[in-house]
Image (cartoon, rainbow over all chains, first blue to last red; front, side, top):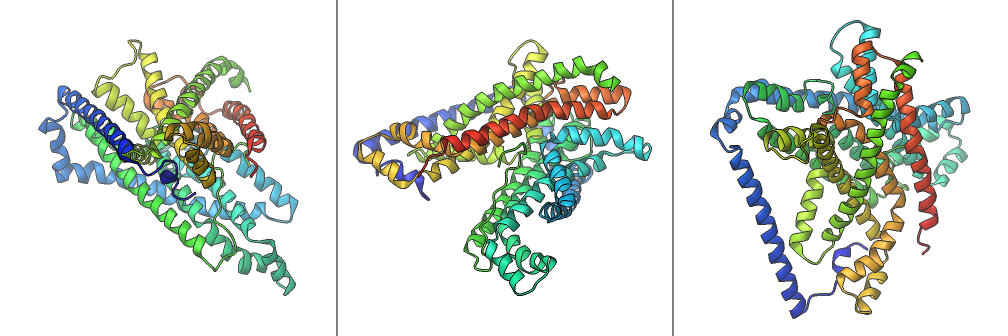
Length: 289
Length: 222
Protein backbone atom coordinates (compact mmCIF):
# COMPACT_ATOMS: atom_id res chain seq x y z
CA UNK A 1 0.00 0.00 0.00
CA UNK A 2 1.72 3.13 -1.16
CA UNK A 3 -0.64 5.84 0.04
CA UNK A 4 -1.79 4.13 3.21
CA UNK A 5 -2.66 7.40 4.89
CA UNK A 6 -5.52 8.10 2.55
CA UNK A 7 -6.89 4.56 2.42
CA UNK A 8 -7.23 4.31 6.20
CA UNK A 9 -10.11 6.77 6.27
CA UNK A 10 -12.87 7.86 3.89
CA UNK A 11 -12.96 11.19 2.15
CA UNK A 12 -14.50 13.27 4.93
CA UNK A 13 -18.11 14.34 4.60
CA UNK A 14 -19.55 17.51 6.19
CA UNK A 15 -19.65 16.13 9.75
CA UNK A 16 -16.21 14.53 9.55
CA UNK A 17 -14.81 17.75 8.08
CA UNK A 18 -16.22 19.69 11.01
CA UNK A 19 -14.78 17.16 13.44
CA UNK A 20 -11.39 17.18 11.71
CA UNK A 21 -11.35 20.97 11.78
CA UNK A 22 -12.08 20.85 15.50
CA UNK A 23 -9.21 18.40 16.08
CA UNK A 24 -6.94 20.55 13.93
CA UNK A 25 -7.85 23.58 16.01
CA UNK A 26 -7.19 21.67 19.26
CA UNK A 27 -3.82 20.46 17.96
CA UNK A 28 -2.80 23.94 16.88
CA UNK A 29 -3.84 25.36 20.26
CA UNK A 30 -1.85 22.63 22.03
CA UNK A 31 1.22 23.29 19.84
CA UNK A 32 0.96 27.02 20.48
CA UNK A 33 0.64 26.38 24.21
CA UNK A 34 3.80 24.25 24.12
CA UNK A 35 5.62 26.92 22.08
CA UNK A 36 4.50 29.63 24.50
CA UNK A 37 5.55 27.53 27.49
CA UNK A 38 9.01 26.92 26.00
CA UNK A 39 9.34 30.60 25.10
CA UNK A 40 8.34 31.80 28.56
CA UNK A 41 10.68 29.31 30.23
CA UNK A 42 13.54 30.41 27.98
CA UNK A 43 12.71 34.02 28.73
CA UNK A 44 12.57 33.30 32.44
CA UNK A 45 16.10 31.88 32.29
CA UNK A 46 17.27 34.88 30.22
CA UNK A 47 18.10 32.77 27.19
CA UNK A 48 17.20 35.62 24.83
CA UNK A 49 19.81 37.95 26.28
CA UNK A 50 21.99 39.59 23.67
CA UNK A 51 25.20 38.50 25.37
CA UNK A 52 24.36 34.81 24.93
CA UNK A 53 23.65 35.15 21.22
CA UNK A 54 26.31 37.78 20.46
CA UNK A 55 29.28 35.35 20.25
CA UNK A 56 27.55 33.51 17.40
CA UNK A 57 27.53 36.66 15.29
CA UNK A 58 31.27 37.18 15.65
CA UNK A 59 33.64 35.72 13.09
CA UNK A 60 36.12 35.03 15.86
CA UNK A 61 33.81 32.46 17.50
CA UNK A 62 33.32 30.66 14.22
CA UNK A 63 36.99 30.72 13.36
CA UNK A 64 38.22 29.54 16.75
CA UNK A 65 35.50 27.16 17.93
CA UNK A 66 32.70 26.18 15.58
CA UNK A 67 34.61 25.61 12.35
CA UNK A 68 37.41 23.59 14.03
CA UNK A 69 34.65 21.59 15.76
CA UNK A 70 32.96 20.86 12.44
CA UNK A 71 36.36 19.94 11.02
CA UNK A 72 37.01 17.56 13.91
CA UNK A 73 33.68 15.81 13.41
CA UNK A 74 34.02 15.62 9.63
CA UNK A 75 37.64 14.38 9.82
CA UNK A 76 36.61 11.48 12.05
CA UNK A 77 33.58 10.73 9.87
CA UNK A 78 35.55 10.84 6.60
CA UNK A 79 38.43 8.67 7.85
CA UNK A 80 36.06 6.16 9.45
CA UNK A 81 33.87 6.01 6.31
CA UNK A 82 36.81 5.18 4.06
CA UNK A 83 38.26 2.59 6.44
CA UNK A 84 34.84 1.07 7.13
CA UNK A 85 34.14 0.70 3.39
CA UNK A 86 37.49 -1.07 2.93
CA UNK A 87 36.92 -3.24 6.03
CA UNK A 88 33.39 -4.04 4.90
CA UNK A 89 34.40 -5.01 1.36
CA UNK A 90 37.25 -7.24 2.57
CA UNK A 91 35.27 -9.03 5.27
CA UNK A 92 32.06 -9.20 3.25
CA UNK A 93 33.85 -10.91 0.39
CA UNK A 94 35.90 -13.08 2.78
CA UNK A 95 32.67 -14.30 4.34
CA UNK A 96 31.43 -15.31 0.89
CA UNK A 97 34.58 -17.31 0.23
CA UNK A 98 34.27 -21.00 -0.60
CA UNK A 99 37.20 -21.75 1.70
CA UNK A 100 35.94 -22.49 5.21
CA UNK A 101 39.20 -21.32 6.79
CA UNK A 102 38.54 -17.84 5.40
CA UNK A 103 34.77 -17.54 5.62
CA UNK A 104 34.29 -18.85 9.18
CA UNK A 105 36.79 -16.53 10.95
CA UNK A 106 35.54 -13.59 8.85
CA UNK A 107 32.01 -14.44 9.95
CA UNK A 108 33.05 -14.45 13.60
CA UNK A 109 34.80 -11.08 13.32
CA UNK A 110 31.75 -9.51 11.68
CA UNK A 111 29.27 -10.96 14.18
CA UNK A 112 31.35 -10.04 17.25
CA UNK A 113 32.09 -6.43 16.30
CA UNK A 114 28.47 -5.90 15.32
CA UNK A 115 27.31 -7.06 18.75
CA UNK A 116 29.75 -5.05 20.94
CA UNK A 117 28.28 -1.76 22.20
CA UNK A 118 30.27 0.82 20.24
CA UNK A 119 31.15 3.02 23.21
CA UNK A 120 32.71 0.08 25.09
CA UNK A 121 34.84 -0.68 22.03
CA UNK A 122 35.94 2.95 21.75
CA UNK A 123 36.83 3.12 25.48
CA UNK A 124 38.80 -0.09 25.20
CA UNK A 125 40.84 1.15 22.22
CA UNK A 126 41.30 4.54 23.86
CA UNK A 127 42.84 3.02 26.99
CA UNK A 128 44.71 0.27 25.14
CA UNK A 129 46.40 2.56 22.61
CA UNK A 130 48.73 4.40 25.06
CA UNK A 131 49.94 1.10 26.50
CA UNK A 132 50.77 -0.21 23.05
CA UNK A 133 51.94 2.95 21.30
CA UNK A 134 53.31 5.08 24.16
CA UNK A 135 51.79 8.25 25.62
CA UNK A 136 49.89 10.59 23.33
CA UNK A 137 46.47 11.80 22.32
CA UNK A 138 44.55 8.85 20.94
CA UNK A 139 41.07 10.41 20.81
CA UNK A 140 40.85 10.44 17.02
CA UNK A 141 42.49 7.00 16.71
CA UNK A 142 40.08 5.38 19.18
CA UNK A 143 37.06 7.02 17.58
CA UNK A 144 38.05 6.13 14.00
CA UNK A 145 39.09 2.56 14.81
CA UNK A 146 35.92 1.95 16.85
CA UNK A 147 33.67 3.39 14.17
CA UNK A 148 35.54 1.43 11.48
CA UNK A 149 35.23 -1.92 13.25
CA UNK A 150 31.52 -1.52 14.04
CA UNK A 151 30.31 0.11 10.82
CA UNK A 152 32.73 -1.96 8.74
CA UNK A 153 31.11 -5.11 10.14
CA UNK A 154 27.65 -3.85 9.23
CA UNK A 155 28.91 -2.91 5.77
CA UNK A 156 30.38 -6.41 5.42
CA UNK A 157 26.86 -7.74 5.92
CA UNK A 158 25.58 -5.26 3.34
CA UNK A 159 28.17 -6.47 0.82
CA UNK A 160 27.31 -10.09 1.53
CA UNK A 161 23.57 -9.45 1.25
CA UNK A 162 24.15 -7.49 -1.97
CA UNK A 163 26.08 -10.28 -3.66
CA UNK A 164 23.54 -12.83 -2.46
CA UNK A 165 20.69 -10.73 -3.85
CA UNK A 166 21.95 -11.31 -7.38
CA UNK A 167 19.96 -14.24 -8.82
CA UNK A 168 21.84 -17.54 -8.84
CA UNK A 169 21.46 -17.89 -12.61
CA UNK A 170 23.87 -14.98 -13.13
CA UNK A 171 26.76 -16.75 -11.39
CA UNK A 172 25.88 -20.05 -13.07
CA UNK A 173 25.77 -18.48 -16.51
CA UNK A 174 29.10 -16.76 -15.85
CA UNK A 175 30.65 -20.05 -14.77
CA UNK A 176 29.19 -21.77 -17.83
CA UNK A 177 30.96 -19.43 -20.23
CA UNK A 178 34.22 -20.32 -18.49
CA UNK A 179 34.90 -17.47 -16.03
CA UNK A 180 36.95 -18.30 -12.94
CA UNK A 181 35.53 -17.68 -9.46
CA UNK A 182 37.34 -14.33 -9.25
CA UNK A 183 36.02 -13.38 -12.67
CA UNK A 184 32.45 -14.28 -11.75
CA UNK A 185 32.70 -12.08 -8.67
CA UNK A 186 34.53 -9.17 -10.33
CA UNK A 187 32.71 -8.99 -13.66
CA UNK A 188 29.22 -10.36 -12.97
CA UNK A 189 28.22 -10.33 -9.30
CA UNK A 190 29.87 -7.21 -7.85
CA UNK A 191 28.73 -4.73 -10.50
CA UNK A 192 25.12 -5.84 -10.02
CA UNK A 193 25.42 -6.10 -6.24
CA UNK A 194 26.85 -2.57 -6.04
CA UNK A 195 23.61 -1.01 -7.31
CA UNK A 196 21.56 -3.11 -4.90
CA UNK A 197 23.65 -2.23 -1.85
CA UNK A 198 24.26 1.50 -2.43
CA UNK A 199 21.15 2.68 -0.50
CA UNK A 200 22.05 0.51 2.51
CA UNK A 201 25.67 1.76 2.35
CA UNK A 202 24.59 5.42 2.41
CA UNK A 203 22.13 4.73 5.26
CA UNK A 204 24.95 3.15 7.24
CA UNK A 205 27.11 6.21 6.61
CA UNK A 206 24.34 8.27 8.25
CA UNK A 207 24.65 6.01 11.30
CA UNK A 208 28.43 6.45 11.22
CA UNK A 209 28.13 10.23 11.06
CA UNK A 210 25.74 10.22 14.02
CA UNK A 211 28.08 8.00 16.02
CA UNK A 212 31.01 10.42 15.60
CA UNK A 213 29.26 12.32 18.43
CA UNK A 214 30.57 9.61 20.78
CA UNK A 215 33.91 11.44 20.49
CA UNK A 216 32.39 13.89 22.98
CA UNK A 217 32.65 11.28 25.73
CA UNK A 218 36.33 10.49 25.10
CA UNK A 219 37.07 14.25 24.95
CA UNK A 220 37.99 14.19 21.26
CA UNK A 221 37.70 17.80 20.10
CA UNK A 222 34.62 17.49 17.90
CA UNK A 223 31.63 19.76 17.46
CA UNK A 224 30.00 18.60 20.71
CA UNK A 225 33.06 19.24 22.83
CA UNK A 226 33.56 22.64 21.25
CA UNK A 227 29.91 23.57 21.72
CA UNK A 228 29.22 22.11 25.16
CA UNK A 229 32.56 22.42 26.96
CA UNK A 230 35.10 24.69 25.31
CA UNK A 231 32.85 27.48 24.02
CA UNK A 232 30.75 27.86 27.23
CA UNK A 233 33.99 28.10 29.24
CA UNK A 234 34.85 31.26 27.28
CA UNK A 235 31.38 32.69 26.64
CA UNK A 236 29.30 31.86 29.69
CA UNK A 237 25.79 30.46 29.20
CA UNK A 238 25.98 29.58 25.50
CA UNK A 239 25.21 25.85 25.88
CA UNK A 240 21.64 26.01 24.61
CA UNK A 241 22.49 28.06 21.55
CA UNK A 242 25.44 25.76 20.85
CA UNK A 243 23.09 22.77 21.11
CA UNK A 244 20.82 24.34 18.49
CA UNK A 245 23.77 24.91 16.16
CA UNK A 246 25.06 21.34 16.61
CA UNK A 247 21.57 19.94 16.14
CA UNK A 248 21.04 21.86 12.91
CA UNK A 249 24.42 20.68 11.63
CA UNK A 250 23.79 16.99 12.29
CA UNK A 251 20.12 16.97 11.27
CA UNK A 252 20.79 18.91 8.06
CA UNK A 253 23.67 16.72 6.96
CA UNK A 254 21.90 13.48 7.90
CA UNK A 255 18.66 14.41 6.16
CA UNK A 256 20.62 15.29 3.05
CA UNK A 257 22.33 11.87 3.15
CA UNK A 258 19.00 10.12 3.87
CA UNK A 259 17.38 11.77 0.87
CA UNK A 260 20.35 10.70 -1.22
CA UNK A 261 19.92 7.12 0.02
CA UNK A 262 16.22 7.25 -0.79
CA UNK A 263 16.94 8.60 -4.28
CA UNK A 264 19.53 5.86 -4.84
CA UNK A 265 16.99 3.27 -3.75
CA UNK A 266 14.36 4.56 -6.17
CA UNK A 267 16.95 4.58 -8.91
CA UNK A 268 18.18 1.11 -8.14
CA UNK A 269 14.59 -0.24 -8.11
CA UNK A 270 14.08 1.18 -11.60
CA UNK A 271 17.50 0.10 -12.82
CA UNK A 272 17.66 -2.52 -15.55
CA UNK A 273 21.40 -2.92 -15.15
CA UNK A 274 20.98 -5.22 -12.19
CA UNK A 275 18.87 -8.28 -11.48
CA UNK A 276 19.17 -7.74 -7.71
CA UNK A 277 16.69 -5.92 -5.44
CA UNK A 278 17.97 -3.30 -2.95
CA UNK A 279 19.12 -5.00 0.25
CA UNK A 280 18.04 -4.38 3.85
CA UNK A 281 20.44 -5.33 6.64
CA UNK A 282 19.89 -5.57 10.37
CA UNK A 283 22.41 -3.19 11.91
CA UNK A 284 21.97 -4.18 15.54
CA UNK A 285 23.66 -7.57 15.41
CA UNK A 286 22.63 -10.37 17.68
CA UNK A 287 21.26 -13.23 15.68
CA UNK A 288 18.33 -11.59 13.89
CA UNK A 289 18.18 -12.90 10.34
CA UNK B 1 41.32 -12.28 35.43
CA UNK B 2 41.99 -10.93 38.95
CA UNK B 3 40.73 -7.47 38.00
CA UNK B 4 37.46 -8.90 36.74
CA UNK B 5 36.89 -10.69 40.06
CA UNK B 6 38.01 -7.67 42.11
CA UNK B 7 35.78 -5.20 40.28
CA UNK B 8 33.05 -7.72 39.49
CA UNK B 9 30.49 -6.35 42.00
CA UNK B 10 30.92 -2.74 40.75
CA UNK B 11 30.57 -3.85 37.14
CA UNK B 12 27.53 -5.96 37.97
CA UNK B 13 25.85 -2.99 39.70
CA UNK B 14 26.61 -0.95 36.61
CA UNK B 15 25.21 -3.62 34.34
CA UNK B 16 22.00 -3.68 36.39
CA UNK B 17 21.63 0.03 35.63
CA UNK B 18 21.94 -0.82 31.92
CA UNK B 19 19.24 -3.46 32.32
CA UNK B 20 16.94 -1.08 34.23
CA UNK B 21 17.34 1.58 31.55
CA UNK B 22 16.75 -0.98 28.80
CA UNK B 23 13.57 -2.33 30.35
CA UNK B 24 11.99 1.04 31.15
CA UNK B 25 12.98 2.63 27.83
CA UNK B 26 11.74 -0.34 25.80
CA UNK B 27 8.26 -0.07 27.31
CA UNK B 28 8.11 3.71 26.98
CA UNK B 29 9.50 3.63 23.43
CA UNK B 30 6.93 1.05 22.29
CA UNK B 31 4.06 3.12 23.70
CA UNK B 32 5.36 6.44 22.40
CA UNK B 33 6.28 4.93 19.01
CA UNK B 34 2.76 3.56 18.58
CA UNK B 35 1.26 6.96 19.42
CA UNK B 36 3.63 8.63 16.94
CA UNK B 37 2.74 6.22 14.13
CA UNK B 38 -0.98 6.68 14.82
CA UNK B 39 -0.43 10.42 14.48
CA UNK B 40 1.56 9.92 11.28
CA UNK B 41 -1.26 8.12 9.48
CA UNK B 42 -4.13 10.12 11.01
CA UNK B 43 -6.66 12.10 8.93
CA UNK B 44 -5.54 15.39 10.49
CA UNK B 45 -2.73 17.06 8.51
CA UNK B 46 -1.40 19.04 11.50
CA UNK B 47 -0.95 15.86 13.53
CA UNK B 48 0.74 14.11 10.61
CA UNK B 49 3.12 17.02 10.08
CA UNK B 50 4.04 17.41 13.74
CA UNK B 51 4.71 13.69 14.19
CA UNK B 52 6.80 13.63 10.99
CA UNK B 53 8.81 16.61 12.21
CA UNK B 54 9.49 15.06 15.61
CA UNK B 55 10.54 11.76 14.03
CA UNK B 56 12.83 13.33 11.43
CA UNK B 57 14.47 15.70 13.89
CA UNK B 58 15.06 13.18 16.67
CA UNK B 59 16.07 10.31 14.40
CA UNK B 60 18.75 12.36 12.68
CA UNK B 61 20.20 13.72 15.92
CA UNK B 62 22.99 11.70 17.54
CA UNK B 63 21.86 10.07 20.81
CA UNK B 64 24.93 11.57 22.49
CA UNK B 65 23.71 15.05 21.54
CA UNK B 66 20.18 14.34 22.81
CA UNK B 67 21.58 13.12 26.13
CA UNK B 68 24.06 15.98 26.48
CA UNK B 69 21.29 18.42 25.58
CA UNK B 70 18.92 17.04 28.20
CA UNK B 71 21.63 17.15 30.88
CA UNK B 72 23.31 20.48 30.02
CA UNK B 73 20.47 22.28 28.28
CA UNK B 74 17.22 21.10 29.85
CA UNK B 75 18.48 20.27 33.33
CA UNK B 76 21.40 22.65 34.01
CA UNK B 77 20.30 25.67 32.01
CA UNK B 78 16.51 25.40 32.08
CA UNK B 79 16.14 23.85 35.51
CA UNK B 80 14.03 20.86 34.44
CA UNK B 81 14.10 18.37 37.32
CA UNK B 82 12.46 15.00 37.82
CA UNK B 83 13.74 14.59 41.34
CA UNK B 84 15.66 16.31 44.13
CA UNK B 85 18.10 13.42 44.20
CA UNK B 86 20.83 14.06 41.56
CA UNK B 87 21.08 10.37 40.66
CA UNK B 88 17.34 9.94 40.15
CA UNK B 89 17.18 13.17 38.20
CA UNK B 90 19.94 12.05 35.84
CA UNK B 91 18.36 8.60 35.54
CA UNK B 92 14.97 9.93 34.45
CA UNK B 93 16.52 12.50 32.12
CA UNK B 94 18.40 9.67 30.39
CA UNK B 95 15.21 7.57 30.31
CA UNK B 96 13.36 10.46 28.69
CA UNK B 97 15.97 11.12 25.99
CA UNK B 98 16.52 7.44 25.20
CA UNK B 99 12.83 6.58 25.05
CA UNK B 100 12.10 9.42 22.67
CA UNK B 101 15.09 8.46 20.51
CA UNK B 102 14.08 4.78 20.36
CA UNK B 103 10.40 5.69 19.87
CA UNK B 104 11.20 7.35 16.53
CA UNK B 105 12.75 4.08 15.32
CA UNK B 106 9.73 2.12 16.61
CA UNK B 107 7.53 4.56 14.68
CA UNK B 108 9.49 4.06 11.46
CA UNK B 109 9.44 0.27 11.85
CA UNK B 110 5.68 0.28 12.46
CA UNK B 111 5.10 2.55 9.49
CA UNK B 112 6.94 0.04 7.30
CA UNK B 113 4.72 -2.63 8.89
CA UNK B 114 1.57 -0.72 8.05
CA UNK B 115 2.75 -0.62 4.45
CA UNK B 116 2.82 -4.45 4.35
CA UNK B 117 -0.89 -4.67 5.26
CA UNK B 118 -2.82 -5.19 2.01
CA UNK B 119 -5.05 -2.35 0.83
CA UNK B 120 -8.10 -4.65 0.94
CA UNK B 121 -7.86 -4.94 4.75
CA UNK B 122 -8.25 -1.19 5.25
CA UNK B 123 -10.93 -1.00 2.56
CA UNK B 124 -12.89 -3.85 4.17
CA UNK B 125 -12.58 -2.14 7.56
CA UNK B 126 -14.02 1.04 6.10
CA UNK B 127 -16.71 -0.90 4.26
CA UNK B 128 -18.06 -2.43 7.51
CA UNK B 129 -18.21 1.08 8.95
CA UNK B 130 -15.23 1.16 11.30
CA UNK B 131 -13.97 4.63 12.19
CA UNK B 132 -10.31 5.58 11.71
CA UNK B 133 -9.34 4.69 15.29
CA UNK B 134 -11.28 1.42 15.13
CA UNK B 135 -9.73 0.28 11.86
CA UNK B 136 -6.27 1.32 13.08
CA UNK B 137 -6.45 -0.44 16.44
CA UNK B 138 -8.50 -3.50 15.41
CA UNK B 139 -7.35 -4.22 11.86
CA UNK B 140 -4.20 -2.40 10.78
CA UNK B 141 -1.91 -2.16 13.83
CA UNK B 142 -2.28 -5.81 14.97
CA UNK B 143 -1.16 -6.97 11.52
CA UNK B 144 1.53 -4.30 11.31
CA UNK B 145 3.00 -5.35 14.68
CA UNK B 146 3.14 -8.96 13.60
CA UNK B 147 4.97 -7.99 10.41
CA UNK B 148 7.71 -6.02 12.18
CA UNK B 149 8.62 -8.24 15.14
CA UNK B 150 12.16 -8.75 13.80
CA UNK B 151 12.83 -5.03 13.10
CA UNK B 152 11.42 -4.15 16.53
CA UNK B 153 13.80 -6.75 17.96
CA UNK B 154 16.74 -4.93 16.41
CA UNK B 155 15.43 -1.60 17.72
CA UNK B 156 15.40 -3.10 21.23
CA UNK B 157 18.89 -4.59 20.79
CA UNK B 158 20.19 -1.24 19.56
CA UNK B 159 18.53 0.38 22.59
CA UNK B 160 20.22 -2.03 24.99
CA UNK B 161 23.60 -1.33 23.40
CA UNK B 162 22.88 2.41 23.46
CA UNK B 163 22.30 2.42 27.22
CA UNK B 164 26.13 2.49 27.47
CA UNK B 165 26.00 6.14 26.32
CA UNK B 166 24.01 7.12 29.45
CA UNK B 167 27.01 8.95 30.90
CA UNK B 168 26.63 11.64 28.24
CA UNK B 169 23.37 12.46 30.04
CA UNK B 170 25.11 12.78 33.39
CA UNK B 171 24.22 9.30 34.69
CA UNK B 172 27.61 8.15 35.93
CA UNK B 173 26.70 4.66 37.07
CA UNK B 174 26.24 2.22 34.20
CA UNK B 175 28.71 -0.53 33.29
CA UNK B 176 30.40 1.55 30.55
CA UNK B 177 31.12 4.27 33.09
CA UNK B 178 32.34 1.71 35.62
CA UNK B 179 34.68 0.30 32.99
CA UNK B 180 35.91 3.80 32.15
CA UNK B 181 36.46 4.52 35.84
CA UNK B 182 38.42 1.31 36.43
CA UNK B 183 40.53 1.76 33.30
CA UNK B 184 41.20 5.34 34.37
CA UNK B 185 42.51 4.33 37.80
CA UNK B 186 44.23 0.98 37.19
CA UNK B 187 44.81 0.93 33.44
CA UNK B 188 43.31 -1.12 30.65
CA UNK B 189 42.18 -4.65 31.42
CA UNK B 190 41.20 -7.10 28.71
CA UNK B 191 39.24 -9.50 30.99
CA UNK B 192 37.01 -6.65 32.21
CA UNK B 193 36.27 -5.56 28.63
CA UNK B 194 35.48 -9.10 27.55
CA UNK B 195 33.40 -9.66 30.68
CA UNK B 196 31.13 -6.69 29.98
CA UNK B 197 30.86 -7.52 26.29
CA UNK B 198 29.85 -11.09 27.14
CA UNK B 199 27.28 -9.77 29.63
CA UNK B 200 25.75 -7.60 26.91
CA UNK B 201 25.75 -10.45 24.42
CA UNK B 202 24.08 -12.69 27.00
CA UNK B 203 21.15 -10.30 26.84
CA UNK B 204 21.13 -9.25 23.19
CA UNK B 205 21.66 -12.67 21.58
CA UNK B 206 18.62 -14.34 23.23
CA UNK B 207 16.50 -11.30 22.34
CA UNK B 208 17.68 -11.67 18.75
CA UNK B 209 16.80 -15.37 18.68
CA UNK B 210 13.50 -14.77 20.45
CA UNK B 211 12.44 -12.05 18.04
CA UNK B 212 13.54 -14.15 15.06
CA UNK B 213 11.48 -17.07 16.35
CA UNK B 214 8.49 -14.86 17.19
CA UNK B 215 8.70 -13.18 13.79
CA UNK B 216 8.37 -16.55 12.06
CA UNK B 217 5.61 -17.70 14.40
CA UNK B 218 3.56 -14.52 14.24
CA UNK B 219 4.04 -13.77 10.54
CA UNK B 220 0.68 -13.20 8.88
CA UNK B 221 0.26 -15.83 6.18
CA UNK B 222 -1.02 -14.18 3.03
